[in-house]
Amino acid sequence: MQTLRDVLQQAQQRGVAVGHFNISDLVLLKAVFDAAQELRVPVLVGASEGERAFMGVRQIAALVKSLREEFNFPIFLNADHTHSLAKAEEAAKAGFDAIVFDLSALPVEENVRQTKEAVVALKSINPSILIEGEIGDIGTGSEIHESAPDLSKGLTTPEEARQFVEATGVDILAPAVGNMHGMLRSMVRGEAKKHLDIERIAAIKRAVGVPLTLHGGSGTDDDDFRRAIQAGINIVHINTELRVAWRRGLEGSLAKKPDEVVPYKILPPVIESVKEVAGSRLRLFNGNGLIARAV
Ligand SMILES: [Zn+2]
Image 1 (cartoon, rainbow, N blue to C red):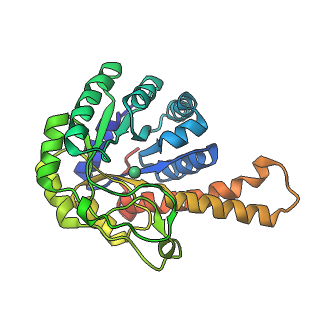
Image 2: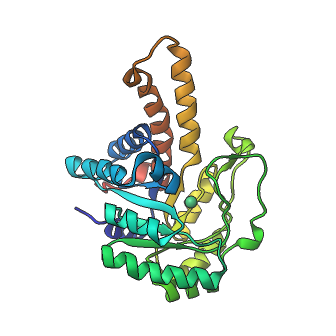
């Protein structure tokens, strides 16, 4: 079975990116897994601290492990946006494959000091776990926002990125390159798109050499995604688009069957709604018709 590190190396060689989708229930997990399995591409599922608190840290790990083993399929689990060493250690002990250790809200020296300590502590629990560090400002909350925050002052520079990766020993870096968590209402309606600083991505990649993650991918222009992946992005996070599809799917299913009370009859259209979005993003990240037989 391939490791997540192998999958990221292959993605870099092939010029594709691994799709990362957040889950907070079994509907989302089934939808993402079905989409990846149909396309035969590796996939990452993520759960933030809030999503983990809802589903249970060990319970999510058991579900993902059971899919990986039963179907011999490269599905991996990431502890998204983890803000303390205690929560990160809990995820590492539960068997997560990767952890986003996010102290980007702290002054950079403090972020470096604590991230470096966390890398050592987490690798002592599982030497093959991958640790992602984060610098810069990409906003918070994978939800619908009324207005765009000004993130222009928090963009990551190549020099900061190089120093951060060297000083901390992180395996993966999440830079701020014009991306933003959540979506504006205009983006949900499809009237506006996010745009990325492609030159900055390429310069950061040259400076650090490690895999790069793009957070807050929902609502990004398709062509910007393609160019960002060519410039060195290896993992793309999509959360809000899936949450929108989940809600719309549920509203549609309930409206269509006002008297239905059987969950396994109400929820399949919700899975389909989410799967459609996950599938279209996976096709884009993996090069559309050029999908290599990765699995
Ligand atoms: Zn994120």
